[in-house]
Length: 213
Length: 213
DNA sequence: AATTCAATTAAACATTTGTTTAACTTAAAC
DNA sequence: GTTTAAGTTAAACAAATGTTTAATTGAATT
Image (cartoon, rainbow over all chains, first blue to last red; front, top):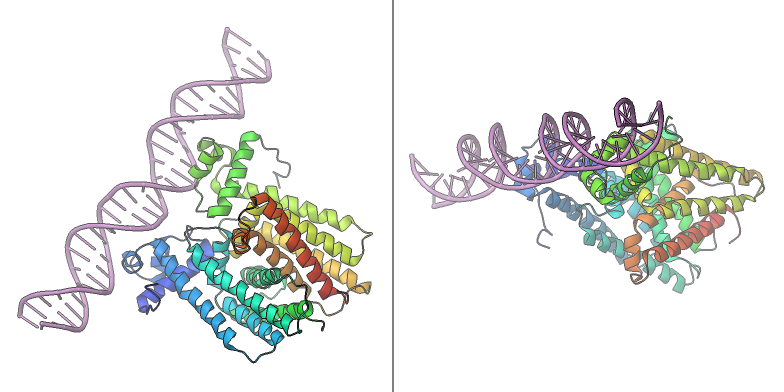
């Protein structure tokens, strides 16, 4: 991968950030290059100049963000001295924090999984596979140590972790309305939500994986 | 709602079905009216003739499908004589079956929740609210009868139900690859998946809501 | 001071977009 | 058989799309 070490200049970062937001809110085809250029306050030709094309632009966004997630997962594996359930809890915290802090990219990811609209499918599958394998490993380890129960649908647990987290993030606006929390600030609400979904998932995994409550 | 009772003719149904599939796979802006017309084997002008515009076309799709879900939920409420956990199980079965049998619409729904790309937001919020209220009611009832535990984050349980189901459906292709099930047919696999996610969620709810395993 | 090359721009490019038009066909109603 | 209205069509429409061009600026290098 040629662009593994990419240091973008200020203007390139403006473009990337704006594009991420607009792709998330209107979809790949719904966000025009002109809109992106205007909101990023750059000339429209600069996008082709720096990134080559619209497709390559969203690819750059993916490369930038997916690497983050991968590195985060790797970091977790190194923690050898944690108890099985503590490792699971760490993973939940880390994953929820990651997508909660990048709600725009989370939306793009969800879209990309639902379809294949000009998005690097292999990259997504790769990072998803990594996630599946990690959870599988953590649960199997816990079972071998006798800390976790035997009959667990590991794969479905991953789907619950990822699916619940994603759903909460993308439904943020709806939840804010339903819970009558429209007064408090965006950031504050996101922080609360992060906490709540994190605790919810931890409890869920604990009660499913172990005998304790 | 003027179009509550809409009986579409053959050609209109062709358009609706094709549009549902293409909107799901390429997004609202990614699927052109020309593509839809061509794949549905109708003249392009027929879409404006029957539905007025592209926006009104996707609205028609939503009206057609969302009503299905609403009616399904209403039907469930009538079952008075079921035990609390059996009601929950029934709800899970019904919900999973509904979105599993309509994977294209499921994808459109997920997209629509992630953003607001020319889609009737109120309609979605309405049916989501209904879902939330129903689960809340079922759990509260179970708690009053002493069948369910006390400290339950009801809202997050809904997010787990909806989020997990949606995620499994939209990740279908990925799961098929990861599990090396690429040999079996599309329908067969979807059936297996439906069964599996349904059982998973039932077990999840049981172990969280009650003391039994 | 002259040269070099990346950065920046407005304008133009060819396609594709959603929608409408106006002519034509079909088939039922009178 | 004529009239009426819905169904159907190819063509045309203006607007928007992603991308490229060719000219110009800027600043560093020679």
